[in-house]
Length: 270
View 1 (cartoon, helix red, strand yellow):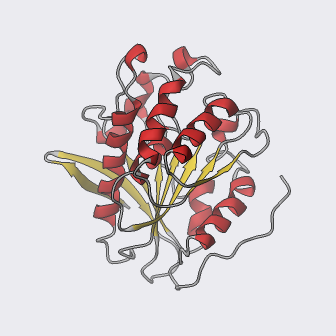
View 2 (spheres, rainbow, N blue to C red):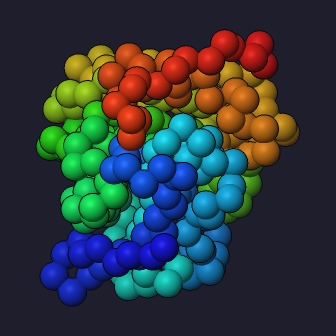
């Protein structure tokens, strides 16, 4: 099912919502997409699907799953609010806050639905969506209990080239600013063979965030399927990130629709 939720006066974002088998009100998981390196791909983007692996992992555990399509993407259209500007003047800090604005709009709009619990929301973000999730941690989020970053960042694959980044040191600087006001403990997952945000970049972002007061579990799984940046949405990826997410949600006391906490599966060894 599809919904439109307001972000600002005159601007709405489209959201695909997937429901679990149970009719009981359930905890909401909001999965936030990345941003293509080629800007021509933005208008073609579609919201995530209910039958894809990441959605099914949460749906099978009793969560409602939502896929917002942010401003400037696909059928949502409008201005690309999270533009960070020219590479030599990249403003990742304010770009992330605009992504966070869209995330917050989804939280506020979807928690009014009768089949969604009004609190305890789980926010997940991949790539640019992950960067927005880090930014969202720095602002008030009273309805949110857990924040998960999968390969979060901006400016990767500059000129569509692997391991080429647009002033990644500015990501670290912005993460430090976010960390000063971040309150909720987070989970960050970056595969070792991520060519958008290689290990040294991911580590620098994490170190800057935590040195400023932010709290996060930082996990770097082994290489995944030729490109670590695809871990979250890739086939078989949930075998790697699933146990990490389940453990983190349990630590955050996130409950499912039946009120029980998430069961932590045994590690797969991958």
